[in-house]
Image 1 (tube, rainbow, N blue to C red):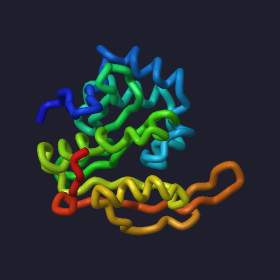
Image 2: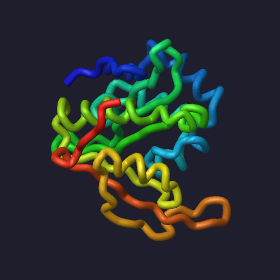
Image 3: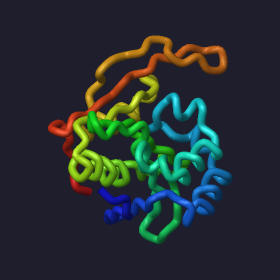
Length: 184
């Protein structure tokens, strides 16, 4: 159940740790991932900080409850962070995380990293389910998730209050048996 690089045709997921934290830091400084990203756990995004992410990535016990990866393109440039957080190894489930910059989202570069991560979680780590809460207003996010087989499991009405406005949050989940992807 090791944590090692995952390679696709267009993207590579590299375990986030002390040896590549400088790359992650420069990405966080150059792009506001919390404003640009559409796919992320809502609670993580609202409390997001570079220090919090650093603790998750670098503390020895963090590897037991979080598996985080830098997303790199085929030339090696870093353009996002993905992983599974809040891992429950007994129940075989976790919370999906994807943070990407605006340009990467515009170029629709989330598909392959998500595919690689879900294959790892649902097949190799033998997770039973993966969940992610998202703003329901983000229809692109919902479309991407449904494309992988995620189903809406519920709505948390007016769950997030931000800048004077309340937002509904949809809880999306996928069971191991429901996962499907299209080769690109």
